[in-house]
Length: 203
Ligand SMILES: [Zn+2]
Image (tube, rainbow, N blue to C red; front, top):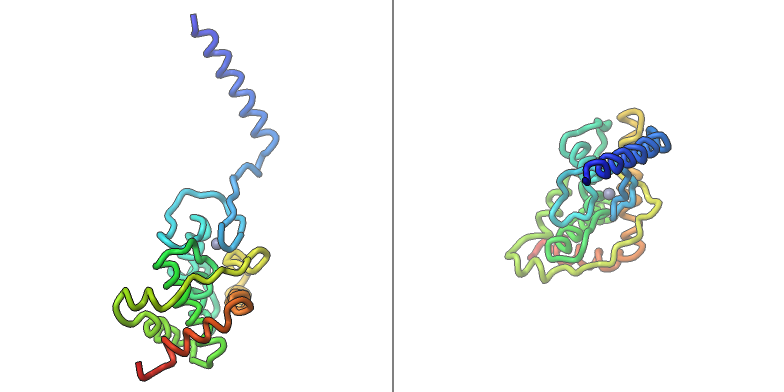
């Protein structure tokens, strides 16, 4: 008895889907906003980082650009700070790992952009910031309320640049913009951490 009903139901569904396709045409790719940098990117299934707050599409873009060099950037001493700026722009939720990650990357940005450390020494800053036992490291830093990144440059803006030179110019602007947003709220705290945990060579 139920067979005809099932048939008419599935026909009705097909009608709705046909209408859906007609109305939305090329535009029915689902978009998803990255919770941290606020970039709107196509919704994709994919890996995200355990404590970095990025959407899957944003994280995939980061992996391609920073880990695989796609699309390529023109060489510039500051492009090594893309890692730090991206991590600082994607703080995620408060946890011991997130607190340490954000702190380390903010210290690298502070050291190079404000304290005069050579860009190629950014790794040295990151390593000094996390010296010692885990318990010591976790007592060192605290969660800082992140700035609002709405309307700021994102990795999507860098990737959209037409040439390696254009992308590098945007990358430098991005690094400086992320740092300035953090610095406007927390420069004093970050400078204090830097003095205690990075610059103090006697420790
Ligand atoms: Zn993002």
